[in-house]
Structures are given as structure tokens and as C-alpha cells.
Length: 241
Image 1 (cartoon, rainbow, N blue to C red):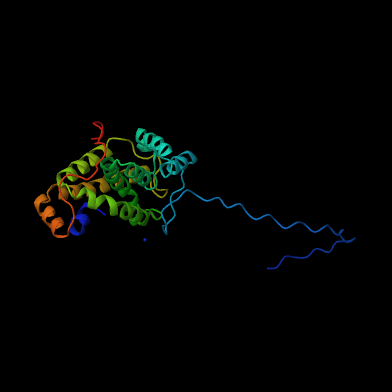
Image 2 (cartoon, rainbow, N blue to C red):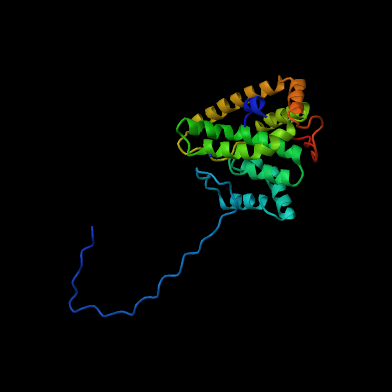
């Protein structure tokens, strides 16, 4: 859910050859063994296919979804050390989920907004007919993650504004993912990224201008918490801005 929407509300038979002399009768072959089914790491149930990832990236994504906290923590640190190496649509959502699961809610929210902005260009390319299901994939992941993050962060509007502003600033400072939609040239892709960023930043301006007192009153009327963030976990590192 984008900032704007969140403020309003808070996927032919073959020829037979005659042999002469007749071919020998061969023993009947054993029935073929059943195929080995390899189950992929847990993924969101989505109609569009997820992008095909390099094996090392797929491994990291699986580790981010691990039930073993130690494995998950090592994967988080590897992802944070090189966020440009993760596909925005399939790498950032499990990173957000892992951070949230480990109690690092402020940081999870930060990367949720990085995911929103960095994946926006993929969705825009898809909407213009030069993608392969990215828009629907982004919407599904956005909605799933936002169910927990949006109500939580909106309890403290000043913190919400700060986290979002820093995420938008940081997203522009590390390199883009090495690949791009196959139907696009490098020039067109960079232009699409610029347009997507501009649109997302317009939405951020709407958030920065929102009436914090009005949001708090509305939440109180609906029985939602207001005030300081609940169990925020570690704050954002100084370098994330």
C-alpha cells in the first residue's frame, strides 16, 4: 500500500518401418522411476511467476526465510552488506520479513519503504507492457507486508515520517540491481527508474504534510494505539540515510 492509499485507508501418427528379418524381441523395460519433485523454499502464493534468480541469491532468500534464527541473522547481515545484489521483488520482502521476525521492527519498516521505491520501476515497466507480472507480484507482497507494518508505524507519525524519509534518501545512494526487464534498453530502464522515483517521492511529500494530530484522533476513535512505537527494536544505523 502506498503512502497515499494508506492515508486514505490505515492477487500425425508416426510411419512404421517394416524390418526384415524381424527385430528380436527385447525384454520388457522396467517402468520408469517417478520423478523427483524438488520443493522450492516457501514463497508467497501468487499468480505471476517470480523472477528466476541466480543460485546464490536464491540460497540467501531461502536463508532469510529460515526457522533457524542464527541462519536468518547471518542472511540478514549478508543482505544488508550488499542490498544492490538482491532482486527488489524477491529479495527485499524476505529481508523485511526476517527483520520483523527478529524484533527489528524499525529496520524492517525502513526496508519495506526501500522495497516499495526500488520495486516501483519494475511495476511501472510491467504496466507499460514491458514486464512480466512484476506489478501484480509487487502488489501482493506489498499488501502482505503492509498488513503488519502500516498499522504499527502509523501509531507514531513523527517516527513514520522519519523512517520513510531516510529510506527514500538511502535507496537512491546504492547501485541498482544488475539486471533489468528483458524488453527494455539500459537507457529506457534508467528513465523508468527516474519516473518511478519521482512518483514515489511525491507520495512521500503527502506523508510529510499529513496532520499528525488528525491521524492520532482517527486511530483513537477506532481503538488503535497512538504514541511511541511498540517494541521498535534497534534504531536505524547512522549510515542508513
